[in-house]
Image 1 (tube, each protein chain N blue to C red):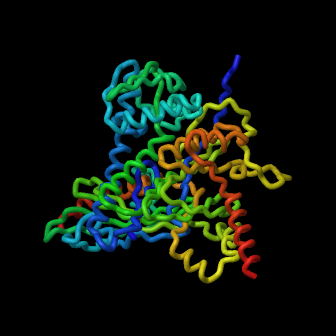
Image 2: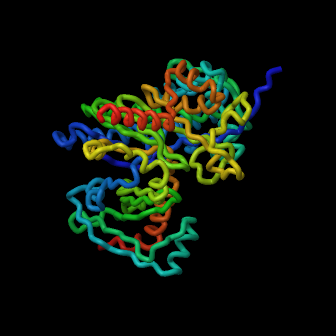
Image 3: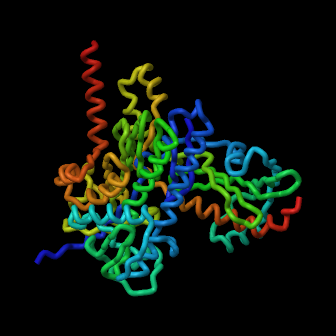
Length: 305
Length: 184
Protein backbone atom coordinates (compact mmCIF):
# COMPACT_ATOMS: atom_id res chain seq x y z
CA UNK A 1 0.00 0.00 0.00
CA UNK A 2 1.19 3.47 -0.86
CA UNK A 3 -0.28 6.34 1.09
CA UNK A 4 0.74 9.98 0.90
CA UNK A 5 -0.64 13.32 2.01
CA UNK A 6 0.19 16.76 0.72
CA UNK A 7 -1.35 20.16 1.29
CA UNK A 8 -3.56 21.20 -1.61
CA UNK A 9 -6.98 22.76 -2.17
CA UNK A 10 -6.82 24.36 1.25
CA UNK A 11 -6.70 21.02 3.02
CA UNK A 12 -4.66 17.86 3.17
CA UNK A 13 -5.11 15.67 0.15
CA UNK A 14 -4.47 12.02 0.81
CA UNK A 15 -3.84 9.64 -2.06
CA UNK A 16 -3.90 5.94 -1.28
CA UNK A 17 -3.02 3.13 -3.64
CA UNK A 18 -4.09 -0.21 -2.32
CA UNK A 19 -3.34 -2.35 -5.33
CA UNK A 20 -0.43 -3.22 -7.62
CA UNK A 21 1.99 -1.20 -5.55
CA UNK A 22 4.28 -4.05 -4.62
CA UNK A 23 4.39 -5.45 -8.15
CA UNK A 24 5.22 -2.19 -9.82
CA UNK A 25 6.46 0.39 -7.32
CA UNK A 26 7.71 2.75 -10.01
CA UNK A 27 4.39 2.88 -11.80
CA UNK A 28 2.68 3.45 -8.49
CA UNK A 29 4.95 6.38 -7.67
CA UNK A 30 4.44 7.85 -11.14
CA UNK A 31 0.69 7.48 -10.85
CA UNK A 32 0.77 9.21 -7.48
CA UNK A 33 2.81 12.13 -8.79
CA UNK A 34 0.50 12.53 -11.79
CA UNK A 35 -2.56 12.49 -9.54
CA UNK A 36 -1.08 15.27 -7.41
CA UNK A 37 -0.18 17.33 -10.46
CA UNK A 38 -3.75 17.11 -11.76
CA UNK A 39 -4.93 18.42 -8.40
CA UNK A 40 -2.33 21.19 -8.38
CA UNK A 41 -3.34 22.15 -11.92
CA UNK A 42 -7.05 22.33 -11.11
CA UNK A 43 -6.31 24.31 -7.97
CA UNK A 44 -4.27 26.79 -9.99
CA UNK A 45 -7.06 27.25 -12.54
CA UNK A 46 -10.12 27.31 -10.31
CA UNK A 47 -8.93 28.94 -7.11
CA UNK A 48 -10.80 32.02 -5.98
CA UNK A 49 -7.85 32.92 -3.77
CA UNK A 50 -5.43 33.37 -6.63
CA UNK A 51 -5.81 36.64 -8.50
CA UNK A 52 -4.25 35.04 -11.60
CA UNK A 53 -6.48 31.94 -11.80
CA UNK A 54 -8.83 31.40 -14.73
CA UNK A 55 -11.72 31.79 -12.35
CA UNK A 56 -10.45 35.18 -11.19
CA UNK A 57 -9.96 36.20 -14.83
CA UNK A 58 -13.61 35.37 -15.45
CA UNK A 59 -14.74 37.27 -12.36
CA UNK A 60 -12.66 40.25 -13.44
CA UNK A 61 -14.34 40.50 -16.86
CA UNK A 62 -18.12 40.54 -16.50
CA UNK A 63 -20.01 40.90 -19.77
CA UNK A 64 -17.18 39.50 -21.84
CA UNK A 65 -16.60 36.07 -23.27
CA UNK A 66 -13.54 34.63 -21.56
CA UNK A 67 -11.75 31.70 -23.10
CA UNK A 68 -11.18 29.05 -20.46
CA UNK A 69 -9.56 25.63 -20.20
CA UNK A 70 -11.48 22.38 -20.46
CA UNK A 71 -11.44 21.89 -16.69
CA UNK A 72 -12.80 25.36 -15.98
CA UNK A 73 -15.62 25.16 -18.54
CA UNK A 74 -16.59 21.69 -17.37
CA UNK A 75 -16.81 22.62 -13.70
CA UNK A 76 -18.73 25.79 -14.53
CA UNK A 77 -21.13 23.81 -16.69
CA UNK A 78 -21.72 21.31 -13.88
CA UNK A 79 -22.21 24.12 -11.38
CA UNK A 80 -24.65 25.94 -13.63
CA UNK A 81 -26.65 22.80 -14.39
CA UNK A 82 -26.92 21.87 -10.76
CA UNK A 83 -27.96 25.42 -9.96
CA UNK A 84 -30.73 25.23 -12.53
CA UNK A 85 -31.88 21.79 -11.38
CA UNK A 86 -32.11 22.89 -7.78
CA UNK A 87 -33.56 26.37 -8.21
CA UNK A 88 -30.21 27.75 -7.06
CA UNK A 89 -30.09 25.77 -3.85
CA UNK A 90 -26.67 25.11 -5.22
CA UNK A 91 -25.43 28.56 -6.08
CA UNK A 92 -21.87 29.27 -7.20
CA UNK A 93 -22.47 33.00 -7.63
CA UNK A 94 -22.30 33.80 -3.91
CA UNK A 95 -18.69 35.04 -4.17
CA UNK A 96 -19.79 38.64 -3.65
CA UNK A 97 -21.19 38.00 -0.18
CA UNK A 98 -18.18 35.99 0.82
CA UNK A 99 -15.85 38.75 -0.31
CA UNK A 100 -17.90 41.37 1.50
CA UNK A 101 -17.80 39.27 4.65
CA UNK A 102 -14.05 38.88 4.19
CA UNK A 103 -14.18 35.11 3.85
CA UNK A 104 -12.72 35.37 0.39
CA UNK A 105 -10.15 37.83 -0.93
CA UNK A 106 -11.03 40.74 -3.18
CA UNK A 107 -9.49 40.20 -6.61
CA UNK A 108 -11.62 42.43 -8.78
CA UNK A 109 -11.55 46.19 -9.30
CA UNK A 110 -15.18 46.71 -10.32
CA UNK A 111 -18.23 46.77 -8.09
CA UNK A 112 -20.16 43.53 -7.97
CA UNK A 113 -23.44 41.97 -6.85
CA UNK A 114 -23.49 40.07 -3.57
CA UNK A 115 -25.00 37.13 -5.39
CA UNK A 116 -26.59 36.12 -8.65
CA UNK A 117 -28.08 32.98 -10.05
CA UNK A 118 -27.06 30.18 -12.38
CA UNK A 119 -28.64 32.03 -15.28
CA UNK A 120 -25.95 34.70 -14.97
CA UNK A 121 -23.44 32.23 -16.37
CA UNK A 122 -23.39 31.68 -20.11
CA UNK A 123 -21.28 28.87 -21.49
CA UNK A 124 -20.19 28.15 -25.04
CA UNK A 125 -17.85 25.41 -26.17
CA UNK A 126 -14.66 26.87 -24.74
CA UNK A 127 -15.68 30.25 -23.38
CA UNK A 128 -17.74 31.54 -20.52
CA UNK A 129 -19.44 34.86 -19.97
CA UNK A 130 -20.92 36.41 -16.88
CA UNK A 131 -24.01 38.32 -17.90
CA UNK A 132 -23.94 40.44 -14.77
CA UNK A 133 -21.08 41.40 -12.44
CA UNK A 134 -21.39 38.48 -10.06
CA UNK A 135 -18.47 36.68 -8.47
CA UNK A 136 -18.32 32.95 -9.10
CA UNK A 137 -16.77 30.71 -6.49
CA UNK A 138 -16.38 27.00 -7.10
CA UNK A 139 -15.63 26.06 -3.50
CA UNK A 140 -18.60 23.77 -3.31
CA UNK A 141 -17.78 21.63 -6.30
CA UNK A 142 -14.20 22.03 -7.52
CA UNK A 143 -12.59 20.00 -4.78
CA UNK A 144 -14.77 17.03 -5.65
CA UNK A 145 -14.08 17.57 -9.33
CA UNK A 146 -10.33 17.59 -8.67
CA UNK A 147 -10.66 14.31 -6.81
CA UNK A 148 -12.54 12.77 -9.77
CA UNK A 149 -9.92 13.91 -12.23
CA UNK A 150 -7.09 12.63 -10.06
CA UNK A 151 -8.82 9.25 -9.71
CA UNK A 152 -9.14 9.10 -13.51
CA UNK A 153 -5.43 9.79 -13.74
CA UNK A 154 -4.58 6.97 -11.33
CA UNK A 155 -6.70 4.61 -13.42
CA UNK A 156 -5.01 5.76 -16.61
CA UNK A 157 -1.75 4.68 -15.03
CA UNK A 158 -3.18 1.24 -14.47
CA UNK A 159 -3.83 1.51 -10.75
CA UNK A 160 -6.43 -1.10 -9.88
CA UNK A 161 -7.58 0.18 -6.55
CA UNK A 162 -7.20 3.14 -4.25
CA UNK A 163 -8.75 6.32 -2.93
CA UNK A 164 -8.31 10.05 -2.77
CA UNK A 165 -9.48 12.11 0.14
CA UNK A 166 -9.34 15.88 -0.15
CA UNK A 167 -10.26 16.75 3.43
CA UNK A 168 -13.90 15.85 3.17
CA UNK A 169 -14.24 14.80 -0.43
CA UNK A 170 -13.44 11.17 -0.73
CA UNK A 171 -13.60 8.78 -3.61
CA UNK A 172 -12.80 5.09 -3.46
CA UNK A 173 -12.25 3.18 -6.69
CA UNK A 174 -11.45 -0.23 -8.10
CA UNK A 175 -10.55 -2.99 -5.70
CA UNK A 176 -10.19 -0.72 -2.67
CA UNK A 177 -12.65 -0.72 0.23
CA UNK A 178 -12.70 1.89 2.94
CA UNK A 179 -14.36 1.58 6.27
CA UNK A 180 -15.74 4.92 7.28
CA UNK A 181 -16.98 6.38 10.51
CA UNK A 182 -18.28 9.79 11.23
CA UNK A 183 -17.20 11.85 14.16
CA UNK A 184 -19.07 14.63 15.81
CA UNK A 185 -18.72 16.15 19.24
CA UNK A 186 -20.28 13.07 20.79
CA UNK A 187 -17.88 10.59 19.32
CA UNK A 188 -17.77 8.16 16.44
CA UNK A 189 -20.79 6.91 14.59
CA UNK A 190 -21.60 4.31 12.05
CA UNK A 191 -19.57 2.04 9.96
CA UNK A 192 -19.91 2.50 6.25
CA UNK A 193 -18.00 0.32 3.86
CA UNK A 194 -17.33 2.45 0.83
CA UNK A 195 -16.51 0.86 -2.53
CA UNK A 196 -16.48 2.41 -5.98
CA UNK A 197 -18.17 5.58 -4.91
CA UNK A 198 -17.65 8.99 -3.44
CA UNK A 199 -18.63 10.43 -0.09
CA UNK A 200 -18.61 14.07 0.92
CA UNK A 201 -19.33 15.53 4.33
CA UNK A 202 -20.03 19.07 5.34
CA UNK A 203 -20.51 20.45 8.76
CA UNK A 204 -23.41 22.76 9.02
CA UNK A 205 -23.31 25.53 11.55
CA UNK A 206 -25.31 28.65 12.07
CA UNK A 207 -22.52 30.82 13.25
CA UNK A 208 -19.11 31.10 11.73
CA UNK A 209 -16.19 30.46 14.02
CA UNK A 210 -12.56 31.04 13.45
CA UNK A 211 -11.75 27.39 13.19
CA UNK A 212 -13.69 26.81 10.04
CA UNK A 213 -11.36 26.65 7.10
CA UNK A 214 -13.93 27.47 4.46
CA UNK A 215 -17.31 28.99 4.47
CA UNK A 216 -20.10 28.97 2.03
CA UNK A 217 -23.15 31.07 2.36
CA UNK A 218 -26.12 29.60 0.68
CA UNK A 219 -29.52 30.78 -0.28
CA UNK A 220 -32.43 29.23 1.48
CA UNK A 221 -36.14 29.68 1.71
CA UNK A 222 -36.15 27.90 4.96
CA UNK A 223 -36.57 28.62 8.54
CA UNK A 224 -33.35 28.11 10.30
CA UNK A 225 -34.83 25.68 12.74
CA UNK A 226 -35.00 22.99 10.13
CA UNK A 227 -31.24 22.86 10.13
CA UNK A 228 -30.88 22.02 13.73
CA UNK A 229 -29.86 18.60 14.70
CA UNK A 230 -31.99 16.52 16.94
CA UNK A 231 -30.08 16.67 20.15
CA UNK A 232 -30.42 14.95 23.45
CA UNK A 233 -32.65 16.93 25.80
CA UNK A 234 -31.20 20.32 26.26
CA UNK A 235 -31.68 21.60 29.73
CA UNK A 236 -28.80 23.99 29.40
CA UNK A 237 -27.90 26.33 26.59
CA UNK A 238 -26.06 24.25 24.06
CA UNK A 239 -22.50 24.94 23.13
CA UNK A 240 -21.72 26.15 19.67
CA UNK A 241 -20.54 22.74 18.58
CA UNK A 242 -23.78 21.13 19.60
CA UNK A 243 -25.66 23.31 17.16
CA UNK A 244 -23.74 21.85 14.33
CA UNK A 245 -24.75 18.97 12.21
CA UNK A 246 -22.80 16.94 9.71
CA UNK A 247 -24.31 16.11 6.35
CA UNK A 248 -22.84 13.25 4.36
CA UNK A 249 -23.80 12.41 0.80
CA UNK A 250 -22.71 9.41 -1.21
CA UNK A 251 -22.66 9.52 -5.02
CA UNK A 252 -20.89 7.94 -7.96
CA UNK A 253 -18.58 10.90 -8.43
CA UNK A 254 -16.93 13.20 -5.93
CA UNK A 255 -18.06 16.46 -7.57
CA UNK A 256 -21.68 15.39 -7.21
CA UNK A 257 -21.30 14.25 -3.62
CA UNK A 258 -19.49 17.50 -2.82
CA UNK A 259 -22.11 19.73 -4.43
CA UNK A 260 -25.05 17.78 -3.05
CA UNK A 261 -23.97 18.29 0.57
CA UNK A 262 -24.57 22.00 -0.08
CA UNK A 263 -27.97 21.32 -1.60
CA UNK A 264 -28.89 19.07 1.32
CA UNK A 265 -27.87 21.77 3.77
CA UNK A 266 -30.43 24.08 2.20
CA UNK A 267 -33.28 21.61 2.25
CA UNK A 268 -35.58 21.05 5.19
CA UNK A 269 -34.61 17.84 6.91
CA UNK A 270 -37.85 16.14 5.87
CA UNK A 271 -37.10 16.62 2.17
CA UNK A 272 -33.40 15.92 2.13
CA UNK A 273 -33.40 12.22 1.51
CA UNK A 274 -35.85 12.31 -1.36
CA UNK A 275 -34.49 15.37 -3.14
CA UNK A 276 -30.89 14.25 -2.87
CA UNK A 277 -31.88 10.88 -4.33
CA UNK A 278 -33.56 12.67 -7.26
CA UNK A 279 -30.29 14.46 -7.89
CA UNK A 280 -28.27 11.26 -7.98
CA UNK A 281 -26.97 11.09 -4.44
CA UNK A 282 -27.70 9.19 -1.25
CA UNK A 283 -27.96 10.91 2.08
CA UNK A 284 -26.00 8.92 4.62
CA UNK A 285 -27.01 8.98 8.23
CA UNK A 286 -24.12 7.54 10.15
CA UNK A 287 -26.07 7.42 13.39
CA UNK A 288 -28.69 5.07 12.06
CA UNK A 289 -26.00 3.05 10.34
CA UNK A 290 -24.47 2.47 13.70
CA UNK A 291 -27.71 1.13 15.10
CA UNK A 292 -28.34 -1.16 12.15
CA UNK A 293 -24.89 -2.52 12.44
CA UNK A 294 -25.30 -3.28 16.11
CA UNK A 295 -28.73 -4.69 15.61
CA UNK A 296 -27.70 -7.06 12.86
CA UNK A 297 -24.77 -8.19 14.91
CA UNK A 298 -27.00 -8.82 17.86
CA UNK A 299 -29.47 -10.80 15.77
CA UNK A 300 -26.70 -12.84 14.31
CA UNK A 301 -25.45 -13.76 17.75
CA UNK A 302 -28.92 -14.77 18.75
CA UNK A 303 -29.19 -17.07 15.81
CA UNK A 304 -25.88 -18.69 16.43
CA UNK A 305 -26.58 -19.39 20.04
CA UNK B 1 -44.45 37.89 -3.25
CA UNK B 2 -42.19 35.06 -2.58
CA UNK B 3 -39.26 36.64 -0.91
CA UNK B 4 -36.34 34.30 -0.68
CA UNK B 5 -35.02 34.58 2.77
CA UNK B 6 -31.33 34.69 3.47
CA UNK B 7 -30.20 32.11 5.82
CA UNK B 8 -26.57 32.70 6.43
CA UNK B 9 -25.66 29.11 7.01
CA UNK B 10 -22.11 28.17 7.28
CA UNK B 11 -21.13 25.05 5.50
CA UNK B 12 -17.75 23.64 6.09
CA UNK B 13 -16.34 20.72 4.25
CA UNK B 14 -15.19 18.27 6.83
CA UNK B 15 -12.95 15.42 6.34
CA UNK B 16 -15.46 12.91 5.17
CA UNK B 17 -13.05 10.41 6.18
CA UNK B 18 -10.55 12.24 8.03
CA UNK B 19 -7.27 11.17 6.64
CA UNK B 20 -6.35 8.92 9.32
CA UNK B 21 -8.00 7.11 12.05
CA UNK B 22 -6.20 8.64 15.06
CA UNK B 23 -2.69 8.38 13.71
CA UNK B 24 -0.92 7.58 10.56
CA UNK B 25 2.68 7.63 9.45
CA UNK B 26 3.19 8.40 5.80
CA UNK B 27 6.92 8.78 5.47
CA UNK B 28 10.05 8.86 7.59
CA UNK B 29 12.28 11.91 7.31
CA UNK B 30 14.72 9.86 5.22
CA UNK B 31 12.01 8.72 2.83
CA UNK B 32 10.79 12.28 2.46
CA UNK B 33 14.32 13.41 1.63
CA UNK B 34 14.38 10.98 -1.28
CA UNK B 35 10.88 11.92 -2.29
CA UNK B 36 11.46 15.68 -2.39
CA UNK B 37 15.04 15.52 -3.64
CA UNK B 38 16.47 12.19 -4.80
CA UNK B 39 18.49 9.24 -3.66
CA UNK B 40 21.51 10.76 -5.40
CA UNK B 41 21.66 13.66 -3.00
CA UNK B 42 23.44 13.65 0.34
CA UNK B 43 21.85 15.17 3.40
CA UNK B 44 24.03 16.81 6.02
CA UNK B 45 22.30 17.52 9.27
CA UNK B 46 22.71 21.17 10.25
CA UNK B 47 20.60 21.99 13.28
CA UNK B 48 19.83 25.62 13.75
CA UNK B 49 19.83 27.02 17.27
CA UNK B 50 17.58 29.98 17.84
CA UNK B 51 17.82 32.53 20.61
CA UNK B 52 14.80 34.32 22.04
CA UNK B 53 15.70 37.34 19.93
CA UNK B 54 15.83 35.15 16.83
CA UNK B 55 12.43 33.75 17.69
CA UNK B 56 10.98 37.23 18.07
CA UNK B 57 12.42 38.17 14.70
CA UNK B 58 10.76 35.13 13.13
CA UNK B 59 7.47 36.00 14.73
CA UNK B 60 7.68 39.59 13.47
CA UNK B 61 8.41 38.64 9.90
CA UNK B 62 6.19 35.59 9.51
CA UNK B 63 3.42 36.36 11.94
CA UNK B 64 3.82 32.87 13.34
CA UNK B 65 5.40 31.94 16.63
CA UNK B 66 8.49 29.78 16.53
CA UNK B 67 8.11 27.35 19.42
CA UNK B 68 11.27 25.35 19.30
CA UNK B 69 14.72 26.57 20.17
CA UNK B 70 16.27 24.14 17.77
CA UNK B 71 15.02 23.73 14.24
CA UNK B 72 16.23 20.73 12.31
CA UNK B 73 17.71 21.42 8.89
CA UNK B 74 19.71 19.36 6.46
CA UNK B 75 21.98 20.74 3.76
CA UNK B 76 21.18 19.01 0.52
CA UNK B 77 24.37 18.23 -1.33
CA UNK B 78 25.06 17.03 -4.81
CA UNK B 79 28.71 16.09 -4.67
CA UNK B 80 30.29 19.04 -2.89
CA UNK B 81 27.76 21.48 -4.24
CA UNK B 82 24.82 22.50 -2.09
CA UNK B 83 21.54 22.47 -3.98
CA UNK B 84 19.09 23.28 -1.23
CA UNK B 85 17.77 22.71 2.25
CA UNK B 86 15.57 20.07 3.75
CA UNK B 87 13.72 20.52 7.00
CA UNK B 88 11.29 18.69 9.21
CA UNK B 89 8.78 20.60 11.26
CA UNK B 90 5.53 20.07 13.05
CA UNK B 91 2.39 22.04 13.63
CA UNK B 92 -0.10 21.62 16.39
CA UNK B 93 -3.68 22.40 15.60
CA UNK B 94 -6.65 22.21 17.87
CA UNK B 95 -7.47 18.77 16.62
CA UNK B 96 -4.32 17.46 15.15
CA UNK B 97 -0.59 17.23 15.32
CA UNK B 98 1.03 17.14 11.93
CA UNK B 99 4.63 16.56 11.18
CA UNK B 100 5.82 17.49 7.71
CA UNK B 101 8.91 17.95 5.58
CA UNK B 102 9.79 20.83 3.29
CA UNK B 103 12.43 21.14 0.58
CA UNK B 104 13.76 24.62 -0.17
CA UNK B 105 16.06 25.45 -3.07
CA UNK B 106 18.87 27.97 -2.91
CA UNK B 107 16.62 30.73 -4.23
CA UNK B 108 14.41 30.22 -1.21
CA UNK B 109 11.60 28.57 -3.11
CA UNK B 110 9.71 25.56 -1.86
CA UNK B 111 10.42 22.49 -3.96
CA UNK B 112 8.11 20.12 -2.15
CA UNK B 113 6.00 19.51 0.94
CA UNK B 114 5.28 16.03 2.27
CA UNK B 115 3.22 15.10 5.29
CA UNK B 116 5.23 12.71 7.45
CA UNK B 117 2.67 11.87 10.08
CA UNK B 118 -0.67 12.89 11.38
CA UNK B 119 -2.01 12.47 14.89
CA UNK B 120 -5.36 13.30 16.33
CA UNK B 121 -4.75 15.26 19.49
CA UNK B 122 -7.87 14.25 21.34
CA UNK B 123 -7.85 10.56 20.80
CA UNK B 124 -9.01 10.23 24.37
CA UNK B 125 -12.25 11.98 23.64
CA UNK B 126 -12.81 9.89 20.55
CA UNK B 127 -12.45 6.82 22.63
CA UNK B 128 -14.94 7.90 25.25
CA UNK B 129 -18.14 8.11 23.31
CA UNK B 130 -19.25 5.60 20.77
CA UNK B 131 -15.75 4.44 20.21
CA UNK B 132 -15.90 1.40 22.43
CA UNK B 133 -19.31 0.57 21.14
CA UNK B 134 -17.94 -0.34 17.74
CA UNK B 135 -16.18 -3.30 19.23
CA UNK B 136 -19.19 -4.64 21.00
CA UNK B 137 -19.90 -8.07 19.64
CA UNK B 138 -16.71 -8.27 17.65
CA UNK B 139 -14.74 -11.45 17.94
CA UNK B 140 -11.05 -11.95 17.45
CA UNK B 141 -11.83 -12.91 13.89
CA UNK B 142 -13.60 -9.61 13.39
CA UNK B 143 -10.80 -7.58 14.82
CA UNK B 144 -8.34 -9.27 12.52
CA UNK B 145 -10.52 -8.22 9.67
CA UNK B 146 -10.81 -4.76 11.15
CA UNK B 147 -7.07 -4.47 11.11
CA UNK B 148 -7.06 -5.21 7.42
CA UNK B 149 -9.72 -2.69 6.60
CA UNK B 150 -8.68 0.87 6.55
CA UNK B 151 -10.58 2.71 9.17
CA UNK B 152 -11.39 6.30 8.66
CA UNK B 153 -13.29 8.87 10.60
CA UNK B 154 -15.45 11.52 9.15
CA UNK B 155 -16.24 14.76 10.84
CA UNK B 156 -12.80 16.07 11.56
CA UNK B 157 -12.25 19.59 10.40
CA UNK B 158 -9.06 19.56 8.46
CA UNK B 159 -7.29 22.61 7.34
CA UNK B 160 -3.88 23.06 5.92
CA UNK B 161 -3.74 26.62 7.18
CA UNK B 162 -1.44 25.52 9.97
CA UNK B 163 0.91 24.00 7.46
CA UNK B 164 0.76 27.04 5.21
CA UNK B 165 1.71 29.17 8.22
CA UNK B 166 4.44 26.69 9.12
CA UNK B 167 5.97 26.84 5.66
CA UNK B 168 5.89 30.63 5.78
CA UNK B 169 7.76 30.51 9.08
CA UNK B 170 10.36 28.11 7.67
CA UNK B 171 10.95 30.36 4.67
CA UNK B 172 11.52 33.29 7.01
CA UNK B 173 14.03 31.21 8.98
CA UNK B 174 15.72 30.30 5.72
CA UNK B 175 15.93 33.93 4.68
CA UNK B 176 17.17 35.16 8.04
CA UNK B 177 19.63 32.49 9.02
CA UNK B 178 20.40 30.04 6.26
CA UNK B 179 21.11 32.01 3.10
CA UNK B 180 24.42 33.16 4.54
CA UNK B 181 25.32 29.56 5.37
CA UNK B 182 24.84 28.10 1.95
CA UNK B 183 28.52 27.74 1.15
CA UNK B 184 29.51 24.39 2.46
